[in-house]
Length: 405
Image (cartoon, rainbow, N blue to C red; front, side, top):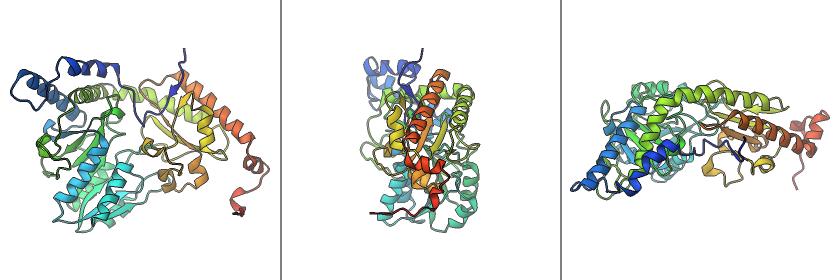
């Protein structure tokens, strides 16, 4: 039985796995101590739960539990990593390298630091969404302290060659930070094999609760230090003060453990569904996949439907299918996606794009329903579009000089 609405916005957030909820429940009521209360059993029980979760989280990414700093999510972890490195390594330099298609949590943090004197290089990407590694190397100067490049993009799912990026950075003695919110728990991530020094990720992107995430901070070769951005009490080895969100952390740990066990199976099941959805929707004339179709996350597809207004498209089925036209954090704006613009798409195509984010609970029936719905809506909107009529009459719309009033 198909239950509506269908949820295909798993890049924005995932539902909490019932097994995660089950693990969390006792920590709201029975085990309610503060993990920093070291003088009684309530505190010890909470601390023990946090320690165990720290091991679960570390194991997913091949880290040492001591390298995991719990935060309120990946946005805070990005801020702590970038601002923390900028302050800690100020004596070495003030240059940061990132890309034009990072999440706003990274871009806005870099913009903030530019006001404080940081020099930031924003690397361009090609139409696949990939940076040029030669350009990366050429951008490094003696003042460069950090290369901050996401593991996988939230809008188009493209996966960056983090290992190659870190090899280049290491050659020049530069730290590598990656936002792995979309990658951790979906594809194998290993901080040592990948040469990552700092990594931000979040529970709610991998079937855990919202409001909890982590920053991985490398402890040896090199030992990385960051200046705390939240002071008060010296929790989390002095890098992030504040009473720990014990239920959230327990849930995060459980979510990581489940992803480690089921990630491969999940991907094997989800990728063919995504491919089937994509193949069916590309039967529509003038529809295009944005970004790489080979080097990307198994559950993400971003498709543009030419001669259709994105807003109208979403309104055609937003009561029955949850989809998005970009990042959840910027979906309030009517600007076309900056990620798609960076790939070289014009406003029209960038405006008519939809991101499909499949997940652990997506079913074949839901995919069938989505194919039907999107196809019908695109056809209906095109039937009403004078531009589509002109296109069908063979008018080359790219050459027309439009009059601006």
